[in-house]
Every structure is written in structure tokens, then in C-alpha cells.
Image 1 (cartoon, rainbow, N blue to C red):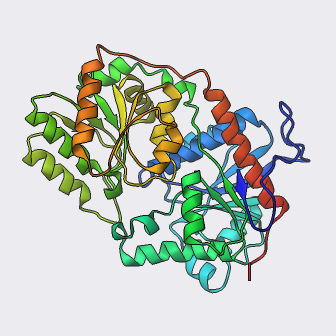
Image 2 (cartoon, rainbow, N blue to C red; image 1 turned 120 degrees about the vertical axis):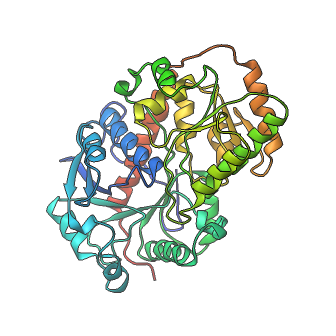
Image 3 (cartoon, one colour; image 1 turned 180 degrees about the vertical axis):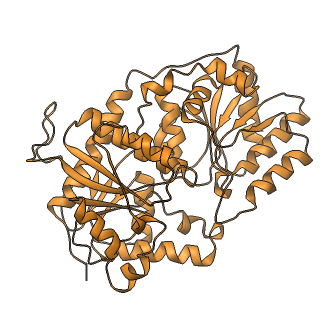
Length: 413
């Protein structure tokens, strides 16, 4: 879905069902590597996107992942294993060495040279800005506007760096890619003067078959979990709201209700390095170690195994652009207990249980009810309609890339 004051909606130009885009050669688009350690949702987005394009639009696109020389080899190998994906390593992507030049002189020369060498047709900017003089059409992926909604969670410098980057992308005429209608409303409210082409591309996930070969019973046993547990696969960022889960477990402990939360994900939040230790100290202080089990970063087959067998997925987040964990739960038909934010309602259309982001009692009530209704281990498989959702995701992204290539805007004045 697309919105613009300058042109009509994104359309699938040349797309015929079953035939794909009619092009003289595959369209090559650039995507900077997203570290799973720093942003698991972003890494999973890339992996699922590339797999969806390979499956539903085979031979039409070549995703080229640009990574620094210090990037994790295993992460890049996993992406490179997807049909059609290429990986390019360059020191221009070790951090953002060309950002100052992009902002001040209009071009990150190192990145631009890498794009030219790889014959890139369209660049996707994900938390990067390569300059208004970039001679290649670009799509700015803005997953969310969290710094606007929750500014208190960002150091002042980080907040303004993010804001400046978005404003530069808007002023440079980028095609803007958003992940939800909720994000679109936020964008229009925050940047009412923007005249860019705006495309809403809703993420959907198709778990790789190889990841489903792991027996959930073995994984549950390996992590010493009970048969009935709830799964919380969120990184330890403050906006992910782990503290509310700790408060809900405290209430359940007082009610003598035994519930186990299995959490996974990284501990590192560069905005607030001590946040994990703060939450963990509360867990210990309240004697909840047996009820809140944090496994850290675990292999993706284990993530899927734990999700498939859980009593329910929990996502207590205060803010999401489009929740990857919710999409993954939907792909298996896993019950969901979610914070009552607009994007969760949009993603689930009322099919989950909801609680306020500051209401641990409501969360405790939901956990208790689901625990009482859960009897024995249930292992779920991919739901039948998932192919349609993932195909639509691939087609929507493809339309956005084609739109950027065919109607690239210069800087907007």
C-alpha cells in the first residue's frame, strides 16, 4: 500500500500472477547487514524477506548484503545460503565511516563505490543515510518512529541523530518504506509536509523448513523448562517492557500460581547498558529466578522450537513498528498475549489477549487463565494460509523497489 502527494499508489509493474516481473535482468538491490546481536528483529526481517523473494519471485531480484569486515561470519553465511543472495564485504560498512561526508557533502563515497562495483539498481537504507547525492535510487526503510513517541528512552544525541537522518532522507526524495498503518499515521503526524512516495510493506514470515527439524521436546529438555511455559523472545531494551512481566510474575507468586516465563534475546542495549542488570536484580530480589528463565541469544531453530511448543507468546512492548515475534507466532497459530498498542491490534485483528502497557494485574490475569487452560505439550506446525501472507509481503516489497527505480525523486525543495 502506498501514499503520496506526488504520485499514485505503488503498483506491481509488469507483475503477472505466476510469471513475476518482466525484466531484462534481475534487479539488484543493496541492503546493509543488520547484526542479529544488536537487532534480532532486523536480522530476521532480512532473512525472511530474501527467502520470500527467492520463493515467490524467483530470478527477479538479487539481494546484495553489504557488510563490514568485522561482521559475524555465521550470520552472513546464513543469508548467503538463500538462493540469489550475494554478500559483499567492505570497510565502508564497518560502522558508518562515511556518515559525516553523507551529511556534510551529500555522499558516502566509500559506500557509493561499493554499490557501483556491485552494479546495484536500488539501495535500501536501513538506519543508514548515504547522502542526497547518491546516484542510485534509494528506499528509506523507517521501521518505526519510536524516538518521537518515547523520546525519554533515547539519549539526546542519539535521538537527534535519528531525527536528522530521517529528515535528510525525506528531504533527499527517498521513497519511504514503512511497516504498518500505525507507522504511517505516526509518519504523517511527525512530518506533515513530506511529499515523498510512501509504501507500507507488512512483514510476514515463512519459517525455513530446516529450522523446523529440531524437536521442541529436546529443546525444552535441554533448557530444563517445564512442559507448560510462556515465551518472551524480546531483546532487553527498556521499551520492550520486561519489567511489567516481572511485576506480573510477582503478583502470581503472591497468588500461589506457578507460571514460568522463558525469555530469549540479547542483553545489550547501547542506549542503556545497565538495563538488563536492573531487571535481573529485581528478579533475584523478588525470588523469581525459577519463574523467569532468561536463555540469552539462542540458535534460531531453538527459537522456533520454543515458540511452537509454548502456551503463548508474550510481547509486552510499549512500542513496535511491526512486531517480528508476533508474525512468527501467527505463522504457527501460537496463542498471543500482547500489550494493547495500535500495531498489535493491526497485526492480530483482535485475535489475541491484550493488556495495558502499565497494567501488570491484567497481564497476570491472562497468564493465569491461559496456564489453567493449557494441558500438556502442544507442538504446532505452520498454518495453511501462511503462504499467501508471505507472497503478499514479497510482492509489496517488490512493488516498492520497482517504484523507487522507475520514479526516483531528486531532492525535494
